[in-house]
Figure (cartoon, rainbow, N blue to C red):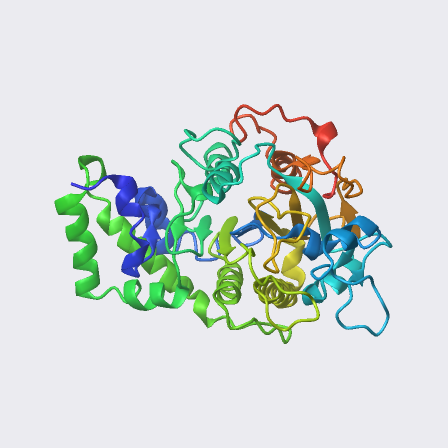
Amino acid sequence: MIHRRDFLKLGATGLGTLAAAHAMPEMLANLLGGRVSADAGKGSRKQLIVIFQRGAMDGLNALVPHYDDNYYSLRPTLAVPRPKKGEAVSALDLDGRFGLNPNLAPFLPLFQSGKLACITAVGSPDNTRSHFDAQDYMESGTPGRKATPDGWLNRYLQTAKIQNATPFRAVSMTQLTPRTMQGKAEVVAMANLNDFNFRAGNATGRVTTSFEEMYAKQAADALRGTGQETVEAVKFLKKANPGRFQPDNGAKYPASPFGNAMKQIGQLIKADVGLEVAFTDIGGWDTHVNQGAPNQAFGALNRNLRDLGDTLGAFAQDMGTRMDNILVLTMTEFGRTVRQNGTGGTDHGHGSAMFALGADVKGGKVYGDLPKLTNTNLYEGRDVPVTTDFRDVFAEVLSKHLGDQNLAPVLPGYQVNKSKFLNFLA
């Protein structure tokens, strides 16, 4: 007998993680019977897309403090040059103090049009430099507490219940359910929309039998009888057929796993499957060696920033006016050391940067407080200090974008104080 949570994490089978198995039979019957169509969620709620940059992004080289001489003295070969007209590898000036890494060039018009906001010196108050712990703390929303059983996004779904929610209210474009989506609320995780439709959506006898047998023979008694509902949820996705939607407005996504994930999230939005919360991640931000200067074609940071910038630029272009209801929020577990190391990289640090794109964003501004990078201002003499707790960012997103004012259950143990909000959302 396998535990429910273990079964629901079987994304590696290629069938996706169907945590929608507990969806109420009458709700699914309505969806499939025509009383509530596949566009049941159209226009009803705003959507939040959370992107986790795993490995700890170098916030200083993404959101460049080009006003600070200390930044340049501490990074003699890695610092992004000050803005200079006609210089392709220099920082793209935002406000006379901060600039974007040139590999994030698609962000500049979004910033200038007021659709993109930048947040500096943001992160966790916990001082761990362990990737595993820091990611766990950020995804659970409880820094310093390892025993938290669920993620902050799942707790939001638990507390902000909606009527006629489809099985695809919450979707993670990942092979397994991420920490931030784990919990009692139902979610769907799938690595690839096409495989999901092709391998699970054909509803062949073999596929249907495998689901039913797995539930009937191995699942706990509490799950008996839900196998058919799982298959029906798959049929619902097939009926919506999000794969038929191609990028609009001339948008071209990078041919990368992250680009593909965001393209497919866009397809789900266009198919009106009732999506409210989506998640995906992009790895490779742990740049200890050969991080890459902006004037170099190589370097993990350069490649990842190009992927991030090109993908989110394409997503905004693809979504068009749909961005009026969408908020994209990026995050990373911690930043990098202010001083470059001896191997052309940076080591585990503390504060980093976030980006917010889309609906409700009061863009065209850099939010947060980054003091000059003098020794006395550095955290533990080496890192960017955290002047904005990531939970204050989460709280502002939940309350202003998603309209959830019951934040205590979502951010347990934290006293939400709206005076701490950066007010980067309207």
